[in-house]
Amino acid sequence: MEMLNFLKDNPYLIAFDNIETINNANIAIKDNHLTFNKGNEFFVFLDNFDKFNSLNFTIKKEQDIKIYLITYQSRKIEIDYNFELQEKANLKIFTNFSSRRKTFLNANLKFTLAKNAKLTVLSALTFNGEVKLNETVNLNGLNATVDIDLLNVGGKTSKYYVNQDVFHNEKATISNIDNWLIATDQAKLAYSVSGSIQKGKEFSKCRQSNKGIMLSDSCEIMVEPKLFIDEYNVEASHGAAIGQMDELQLYYLLSRGLTENDARSLIISGYINPFISLIDNKEIATQLTSQISRLIRRKAYNE
Image (cartoon, rainbow, N blue to C red; front, side, top):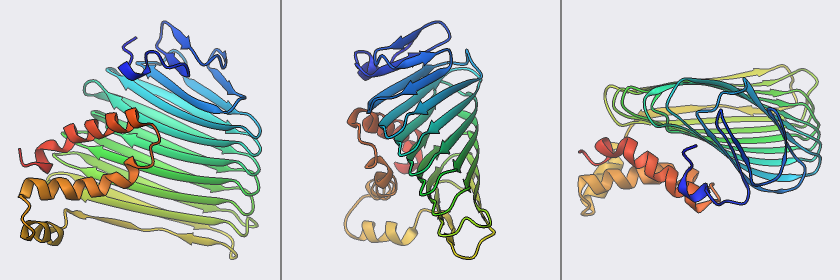
């Protein structure tokens, strides 16, 4: 198992490849099912793992859990991740799907929330190759809440096909989605983002925001935001703003004495830093920043 250095001696590490399992955290693991019944911060690392078709996570009632789910792969992987949040459970999860070389990922993330459960998802996509990612959230309990922030940086000829679906299946449920998208070279990012509030699920709130910046003339970012609302007494909004790097911002910074390289770097840093600041772990934040710099370095610095 090719472990990341800062994880090797972590006392809360759970790591998988197709041969061995490391369970430093001593959580309950039975085949492909992980049960978290005591609040803490956990690191789940997968190295080319596809021993099972799925990994299932249960967050027990009233537990406050933080999970860093990090995957590294060098070959084609198809896997489902299922998360069950029981009543009053609180899960904050960071996911980073990365590849050592150009390959293919098909991942399905499904979250099911009970009454008063709260879910916070930070997803980073810095994958080299083709990604098909489906994120599905079922808000099944009263007052269940989900906040999703996703940062996707695509370079070279990578392709990303992402579907995000939130279903408000109970009254007074809340969902917020913020997508931060960057494309360069010949990368293609295609997003379908939907929120559904069924009839009778009043007092629910559903919000989507999608922002994208393109750093080359050959890349593409496509976003299709959708709302399916079958109830009057709700709040719902969506939007998408996609474009090239702001030339007025660039001109302003150049007029203040910055070089073009420094000006472009500053604009991109200002775009990604709100997401990076949400990551509590410094080592993971540093690692992600390094991954992003390698992907966009040529365009950001005109190399």
